[in-house]
Amino acid sequence: MRYWLIVISAMVAVIIVSCTDSPVSDEPDQGEIAREVNWALLELNNLEAVREVYWQNYGEDPDSIAQLYPYLDTCFYQWDGVPASPDSAYTAIMPSYKWWQFGMVASGDTIHQFTATSTAEMVGGAGHVLTYNVVSGIYDGYGMDAANPMLFAYLLGRFINPLLIFETSATFDLHEARRRMEIVREVNAAAESFMGLKGSIIMFVNDYGEPPDSYVQLDTLEYISLPPAFTEWWQFAFELRYVTGSRWDIIKLHAIATDEMAGGGGDTLTYFPGRYWYGDFGRWEYIGKWARWKSPFVGP
Image (tube, rainbow, N blue to C red):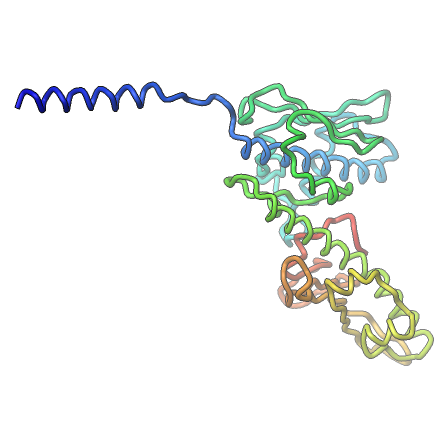
C-alpha cells in the first residue's frame, strides 16, 4: 500500500511541475491586432470623408478633430431613418474610439495627416501610431502587415459604417470583411446610377411625351449606359405618376439586387427623388435593406 502511495505522489508531482513549467506567451493575439488595426484604418478613412464635406461647407479645414465628429453622427444615423441623438454619439458607439485616439497634423490652415494612436485598451498596447496622408492617400505605421490587404481597394474617401463591416467581438475574418466591403461598393454603385436613371427618364418623356416602359427600353434606345458590372449586380426599375399633358412625376427609383450582388439577390434599394411621405417611410430619400450600407456622399 505504501508503494502505491509513493507512485501516486510522484505522478501528482509530475503533473504539477508540467503544468507550472509550461511557457506562457506574452505576445498579443495577432488576430485581435488585425481587427483593431483595420478598425483604425476605416476610421481614418471616415475622418477624411467628412473632412471633405466640412471643407465644402466652410471652404477651409477644421481647427480640431472634434469639429468633424458631428458629421460622423449625421452619416451614421441618417440612413437608418433615425435622427442623430446626443445620447448616442458615433464616437461612443464605435469601439475604435476605445482602442485608438484620433488626431490630425496641420500646417497653417491645411490638414496634411490624420493619426490614430493606440490606447492602453488596444491589445498591442498603448503608443502605437497609424497615419493617413491626406495628399498621397497612403496609410502607414503600426500593424500594417496585419491589415486586410483588400481593405485599401475599398477605402475611397467615402463614409463607411464600421459596424456593417467588422464584428466587434470576433477575430477578424478576411473573407467576410471583404464580402461586406463589396456590398458597400455595390450599393454605392446603385445609388450613383439613380442620377443617370432619373435624367434619362426626363429626357425620354421630353422626347416622346410619355414615360419609357422599362430600363431595358432606355438602354436599348441609348438614353442611359451604365457600366456592365452595375447591371450585373442590379436590375433597375421605376414608378411614375401622371400629372397632366406630357408631365410625369418620378415617384420611386428601384435597384433590385441580382444573384451576382455580394449580399445576395432579391432585396431592393429604393430612392424617393422628391422626399415624399409614403405611409411609414417618412421623408427619408432611401429605403430598403441596403439603404444603411450606402455612403451619404454618393447618389442624388
